[in-house]
Length: 378
Picture 1 (cartoon, rainbow, N blue to C red):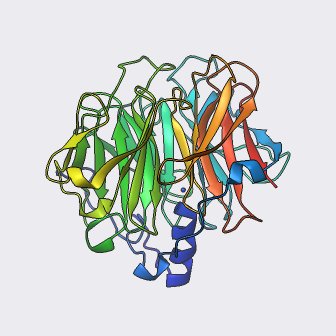
Picture 2 (picture 1 turned 180 degrees about the vertical axis):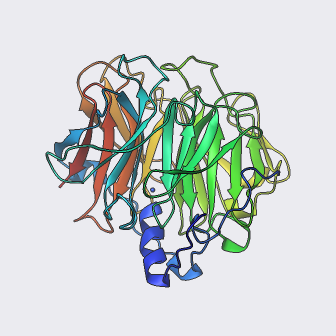
Picture 3 (picture 1 turned 90 degrees about the vertical axis):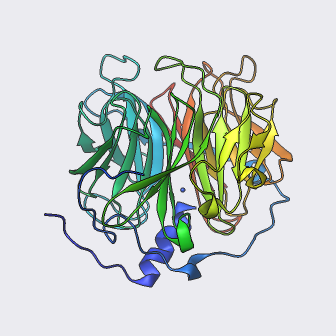
């Protein structure tokens, strides 16, 4: 049986601040266990987005290796919002895309790292059946783990102890490639998860929590490249701004960042992305906009939302400059770029930002050239 955990408003509010990184499947789902209670009071006031945090975070250091059981090529990255199960609040949670033979899309481990220099990775969960090709992670306020697994073509949900609670598979999932927790991203400000698919129609799916899961395919038509594992592009790199209920989607197929405003109000079938990737139709088309398109974006897959509302996006296909992060304002003004690895292009995958001001802000990212989590800080 699933255990019921009751969360205080203060605990959920703290977790929601950190998160700012149909048909039913799987039987009964307990709302509190899956992050289904987050108060409206957690919304924050808008901060000044006119200055670059990427320029201020001048130090880059290694947190630790992500290799456990020989598995490597870390993709998904997020932060534990609370202390539960195997996690301590603030732990970094990673999933590996490759197995011990370094075969693309065959990794099946989730690992944890304490956010301190020299941290040693610890195994959280491993499953060839449900986690194969894990590429994105999101955690509920109680550290329940939601994983997008491209090769398994499913969305497993695991407890904070790493044990499988329920495996969500079948339509509307088509090789999931993105995952994010949205404290107020559902109807009437309810917490939900969003997932994206890199096959089929290039969709964005809202996963509604309750006595059972239901799904709203709120958007379709995002560009996908039908790439094999190791060369996949499509809607990914999700970020959710809880201040204004905005969902950001990165797409490396056409080098775009798209924003859905008041995403909680977008109905199923609300947005259709036109073939150029720059225009939208459908009943909620007015809530979609292109934040930025083109250079200096070059094969982006990941993004991180900073405390002031800026986005940092990670490129994977730069021929010059190698592994470049790009910082932009919510309106799409480029503020800074930073090469974080001078080695082979394609090293930046999972990214997550923490901190509440310019003094304690940090950007963590997976470096696939070295199989490490690194951090940019002051």
